[in-house]
Figure 1 (cartoon, rainbow, N blue to C red):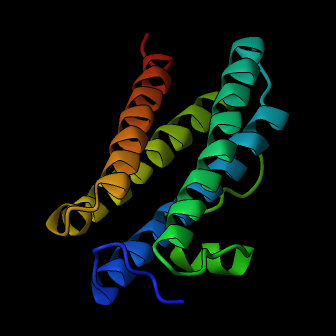
Figure 2 (tube, rainbow, N blue to C red):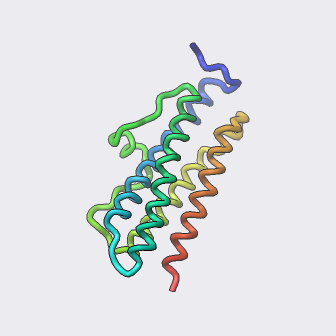
Length: 156
């Protein structure tokens, strides 16, 4: 049965394609954050271990919300590592960086997710897709806050 929610097919497709990139960025950041949670060492271990856990748990919930919005628009959500690698603007990190490098990489990841979410906003706004706009606004707000908190750990 066709989707009839008041947004044309081509607009829904454009929004779903953007959300697929957001999903890929979010999942890639989830994996990176979880990896760093497991492997962080040094004097800030306890603080970072707990902070990274809080952030990866939130990211794991976010991927579901994003994927379900893609599905509500009538398109399949990407769900493989291969698809995420093609779609994500966030690259994997080889090896185990030092704690401060982990923080820097996660700041970059958080900010990348914000940029991706922001890039989708005009397409959603143009057609009055308030549910997507709301999702994007919430994601941007959370990732901007996470980037600020992580960045603050790097100040002397």
